[in-house]
Image 1 (cartoon, rainbow, N blue to C red):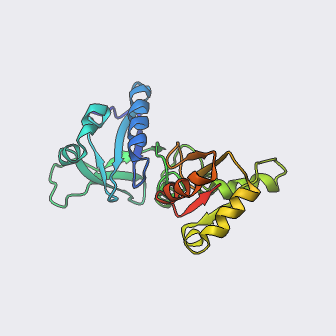
Image 2 (cartoon, helix red, strand yellow):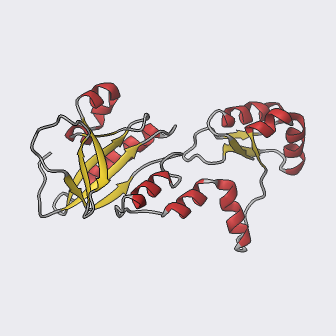
Image 3 (cartoon, rainbow, N blue to C red):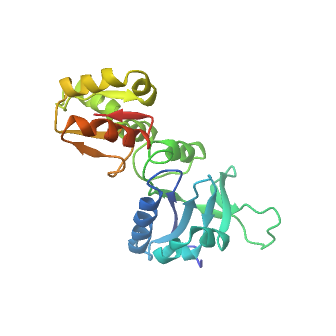
Length: 229
């Protein structure tokens, strides 16, 4: 990537260890395509599912994500840290003698979806290294991601929200029949079963009859430890 030294360096973070990993890639490529290149240098920072960071000019083209392993192999693994004066991105390889100085980052644009990134995890990392970022802070991200907690916050503020039942995978394993009965009596059909802290429509089922309820709950629990009905 050839960068213009007079422009703002924007690190676009995407990917992450989330079931919405692929959705994040699509969102990020769309954003990077439309950001004004006359004002900003765009630096893709792809977060792999195993927690590593990579960058490459090839990441501007969605077609290159058809083979993630191949893309990673042709990309540069990087680390991002605060050197005491600024936040910089540099090659992870100790034997990288390219002679290039670490790249100074001015701001981060997190384009992430789901747990382990959109829920405040990535925001906390960015605050730790003191890299300014767009979007919600750690607390807002965390509260907003957990639908049950967010409902409680809204209800406390006097904003009307639908009643719900929340339970964990352990609760459901131990008290299956009690929970099914409570859901049927307290919520009634039709109802929505969803993982408590995911986005998009992952793991969500509309249930219209009792016979389909257990199947919907089992599906939701395959994506998250807690479920909201």
